[in-house]
Each structure stands twice: as C-alpha cells, then as structure tokens.
Amino acid sequence: MESFKGHSFLKTNDFSPDQIFTLIDFSLELKHKKQNHLPHPYLKGKNIALIFEKPSTRTRAAFSIAAHDLGAKVDYYDKGDIHLGVKESITDTACVFGRMYDGIEFRG
Image (cartoon, rainbow, N blue to C red; front, side, top):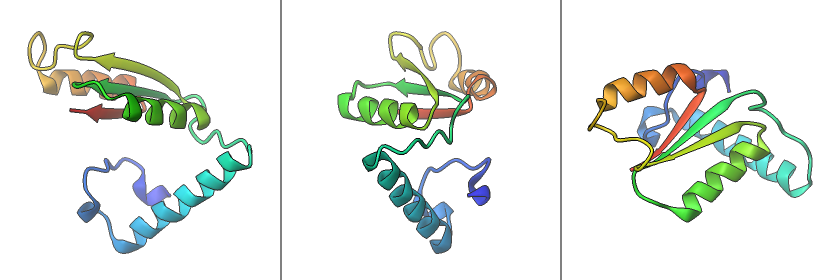
C-alpha cells in the first residue's frame, strides 16, 4: 500500500494493473473484517473532509461509515458551508484543506 502514499486517486489510468489489483485485494480484506466485526482502524487519528457541492445521501453515508469504521474523524461541508470559487478561490481552499486534513473527498 506504500505505493499509494501521497497519490490522489482520480482515475484508474493513473495506476498500473498491479496497483489496481492491490486495491481490490485490500478492499476485500476490509470487507471481510467489517463482516466479521474485526477492528480495522487503519485511519485512527486521521481527519477526513467530505465536501459536497451537490447533496448525495448514499455517497455521504458510504464515506462517513467507511471513515468511521477505519477510525477517522469526518467533517462534512456542503455548498452552504464552503463557497468554492466565490469568497476564496478553489486553489486557496484546496491548499488550506490539504494542510489541515489527511484526506479529502469531493463530490461535485
């Protein structure tokens, strides 16, 4: 998993087939641990920002539960909380959040 450190996952073409298979294997391991109620706090002590430009109940629930299961703390922001590109530029917001959070999920 070290080969993923510091990389954003934007599209599958950014990764080799071996890396994709590593991700699939890891996801199966996480699924097994959840189904068997085995703790798997890989993100303990980490902070994740969930940014939603448009509401999405299923995506928000999925990311919130996954982060919680992995031990992370989640902060949720919707378009009423953050005015992307209005009061501050998207670049500035991304830089600030990038320094404050260990991970960012964006749903445009």
